[in-house]
Every structure is written in C-alpha cells, then in structure tokens.
Length: 489
Image 1 (cartoon, rainbow, N blue to C red):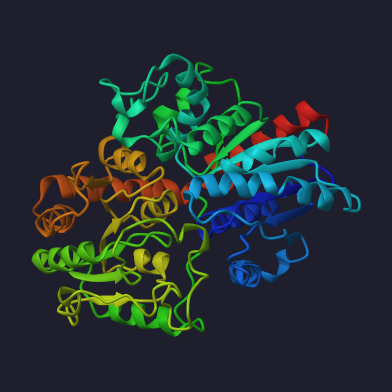
Image 2 (image 1 turned 90 degrees about the vertical axis):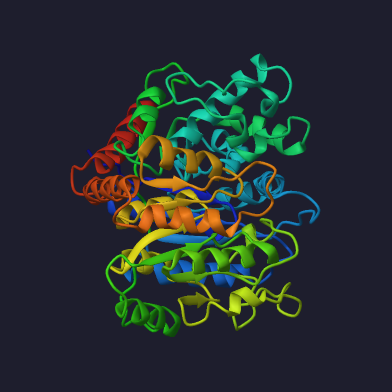
C-alpha cells in the first residue's frame, strides 16, 4: 500500500532531547516511502536567540543530503516564558503560545497541505490545529510505553484518587501494567496543586482524542505494557511501538577533534573495562555530588569516561530546554563559566580516566568495545542507545520520567542496577556509587553477569526491529493502513 501526496507536519518542542528523536522519526517516515513531504516546526524561547541556527546545524549534521528536498524545517517565532517556573510548565506555555503561529504557517502553505500532524506529549496542546485543518492526529512519545499508559490513565486517576498521589500507601495501579510506586511517578504528578499538574492533566485529555500513538520502544523491551495498551482496558487508541529510533554513530575520521580524542583513548583500554558516566545534556549536578562521584569512581577502581558540565551550588534541570546551545566556545555554559569551581577530588582523578567537558560522543562511546557499563540519569533516549549497544546500566534517575525508567530497566527488563538512594538524600555517597558500578562491571558478580547477558540479547533484537518486515517496520506500515482507512487517503 502507498499513500500519494501525504504531507506530515511535525511540531517539535525545544531541547535536543526532543529534536534528535523527532528527526529520527522524520527520517523513518520518509524512508518508509509513505511520506512525500515533511515539515518540521521547531520552537525556541526568547532568552536563547541563537538556537535556530544551532538547531539547523544539528539537523543538517544528522541528515543525508538526499533528504533535504523532502524534510523542510521552519523555525517558529521564539516564545517569551517566565524564568521562575519549572521546565514542564515552560513547555506547556511554549506550545500553547505557538498555536497562532502554526495556524498562520499551515494556512499559507501551497499544495499539498499537511494531512497529518505529529507532536509529542506537551505538544498535544496544539492538537486543535489538526481539527481546524482536517489533519489526522498523532502523538510521538520519546518516552517509555509505561509512560504512555500512565498518561492515558491519568484522567481516570484524577477522578478516583483522593489527596496527593505521593501520599498513597499503595502503588498506583494501571490496568494490565506493573504498578508504580508513588515516589517514582512522572514529575508533573508529584504535586496536584501545582500548575504543572493541571497542564499535564489537560495534555492527557488531548492525548485521549488522537488517532494514534507512536512510541519509541519495541515489543521485546516492554512486552507486558504494550499488550496492556492494546487490550482496550486503558484506551481504544491504536499504539505503534516503532523503536528504537536513535541517531547513527559517526565514524572516527569525521572532522571532530573531541570525538576522535575520546575514541583514541578508548582504543587503548581493555575490552569492557570502562564505565561511561553522563547525567544527560540538561541537568547540572551539585558541587558536593561531583565530589562524591569522583570519590566513588576512585573507590571502584574502574577506568572511566565522565561527561559533565561545571557544577553548581544547587542541582537542577534549568538547562533542559537549552542544552548544548547556551555555551561558550570552550563548552562551558555561559551562566556558569566564571563562577564554577570543581572540588579537589575531581582534579585528583586526572590520569585515572577521561573527563569530557564538551559535548560527549555518547553513542560512539557506548558502541566501543572498551565500554562495559553506563552510569546514566535514565533518560529514555540514553536507555535506548545503551540497549542498542548492548551496554548494561547503573541507573541514577534525577527528574521527569527517569524514576519510572530506572524501575523498568532494573526490575522489569533486567538490563541495569538502580542506585540505592533514599528520597531525603540530596547527595549519593561514594561507597554506594562504587558498589553499584562494581556490581555491573565485575565478571564475578552473578547479578552483573545476568544483566550483561540480558542487555546483549536485547541488542540483537533491537538490531532486527527496523529490518525490512521487522516488527517496528511493520508497525509503521500498520499505522498508515489505519490512517488510510480512517481518513480515506
């Protein structure tokens, strides 16, 4: 089956954590021969005026030249958002404010106009545009399927659960899925009196009205949850697991001194002897936590590659929407370049591993044979990259969906070990860090051996997911069959 003159509009929120998976989705849609034209709408904030050019450079670096005539990028006007609110609320404000700009851009397009609208979780606030222009409506979750189930079930939970979710004595139940510990819930659900919760509730209501949901996962990774989503007990909306959608690793001979330097260092290390440490692009850890991390790495006795930005007095996700963009030429965030100082313990680690103070070539590091573990914040993109490279995870969740992700990989899938962190602890101690790294890395550890075996099994399955007539390939085909039946294309 083929669809003639299908024009897809992708509305992407700001932040590299959104742009990269959205671009990979765009490439799959086009290469699948179901889309003849695709327009990516990119958003930004006014306090980051350099973003459009940087975002364009990132997209061009990840796209092959033959796609430039099919995938078009439109930068929407930057949105002014309050600086004193949390990241989720900022995203909701941005997407709502974009509606008139999107309407203007779509109304002035020449034929063929978009026939389908695809956006992400917070982008669901722009779905009324699809109804205005008679487009099919899709949400792309760059989160886990478990998070999809939670979003679809949240309006029901809002009606039946009394008081704060975090005060509940029992786990939060979702039909057919593993229960969720209240302390692991998605960040917007932690305070029902906060504006973010009300924004999230409205978003979940919008998601219940879409024609289909793309999820960046695959059957074997979240089999139980995918079955539950398709049972009709949570929702009747078709769900299509089309992952893993991750970028391609660059070759070492590319024009990138930082990438080549890291890979050259890894080439000199023994097989599976290096732990890679990264807390993601949008999170800054505290000065005290950097100290404990350095001591933990030292105690573990393992070689390491540690990707980080200068610490601050208080940890947080303030850079999530501007990650990788608001930097000086030396890679130090402008807001911290003159005030951040690393603890003495950090400098003591020089010579025992590699500290990367600029953008780390994460996928290339994970693919390298010397890498034997990944200490990760458990962002879903990072988990998929680790699975696709067959690298077990030390799970250190920080915010957003990461607590749920950590629980999935440790308890459900069995590809990682979660750090033992109390809810009241602001800092994870060096001994806990060292102990968990050794559990993943040591060949004698029984749990570590089982974890390494399982992640390598999933790597082989992930490699076949997007082969011709593989499960994710077929899921995308099925989604277009459904669109043609529903909208008569």
